[in-house]
Every structure is written in structure tokens, then in C-alpha cells.
Image 1 (cartoon, rainbow, N blue to C red):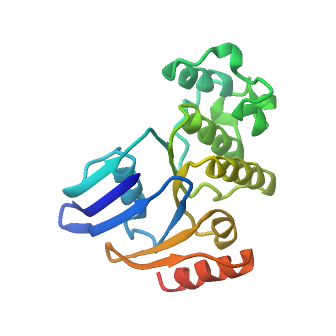
Image 2: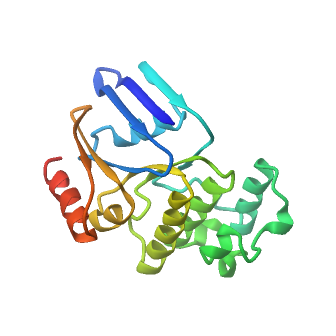
Image 3: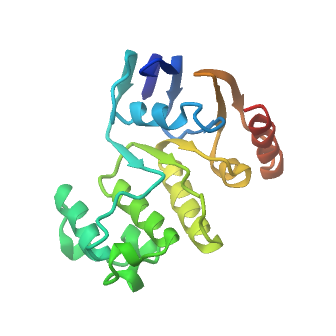
Length: 221
């Protein structure tokens, strides 16, 4: 499980999270909703173990993969060179790179292998960032605005990959302001407001109904 209990976090005098608790189970996707500066990214980084809370407990069984809103890539290196660093970090054989079943092939990154990361489009950078986060086969996948500013093809390919991983029991926490994409993936939506969870909404019904429930929560943010 991935569980947060009573998480508090402040930056100076600014209290960002005020006793937030949540639990994500295997095969479950939870969407965090809230206005700008509501503490969503802070909560996501604490869930991923990237920063410590001022108080509260984080319990996590299994590896975490984190996809930041802005891809953390080395612009001077090519796409393949960036990918090679992650392959090496996880001890994966480089001869498996761009194999028929690899994630980078599934997300159609092959044509950009020799392109410097600094010259890649935003959509390709996001796809590469997703692949890098997933190479270690994490049990928990944390995504900060994974569908923002993407073209339709990139959205569909990432969404298809994430749905497949969720069906295999991967748990997910994501931040999204797109009710359609979030509605396709998320099982629950949490409204974060003034540092606390104000609503915990179980999503059900058709995609239109699920998206409508998310849109209603967004209107309350």
C-alpha cells in the first residue's frame, strides 16, 4: 500500500498541507484536484519520498516512479543518451533498448533517438519522461499533469500505457486539470483545498458521468 497519515508541510509561514491523509491501493488510480498552490505537487513529492513532511507518516511498500510536470532531462544529450542513463541506473541491458516490446517503442520514441533532448517537442519530452520513470517497474506511479499541453497522439499513447499498467495492479496518484483524461484513468478524485482534503469522490458510471463529477470538483477548487 501507499499511505499518508496526518501530513503537514509549511514553507516558512505558509502552511501548505494541514493534516492530509490518504491511501492508494494496488490497481487504484487517484486524481488530486485543486487550485494552483493548493499543495498538490507538494503532496505528490512527499508521497514519492522526494521531500519530507514537517510531521505525519508516509508508509510505502514497493518502488515509486515519479513523472514531474517539467521533464528532468539533460538537454545536451540525445533522447537515446538520456534513456541510456536510466537503463544503467536500473541495471537493465542496453541491448533491450528500443526492442519491440520496450516502453520507448510502445510510445513511438524511436524516430527521435538521435535528437538532442533540448530540441524535442513538449509531447516527446513527456513521453520520454514517462518511460524513464517506469523503467524500474515501480509499484506506484506518481504523475504531475501527465496530459498537459500534449497533442492527441501523445495523450492517447500515454493513456493506453497507463491503463495497461493499472490493469496489472499498479497504483497511481496523478494531478490533472483535464476531466476527460482523468475520468478515463481515475477511480477516485480528491479535492485539496486550503491544505486539506475537502472531498473524496468515488468515480463511477460512464466516462461522461465520471468526467462530469471531476469537472464539478474542479469548480469547487
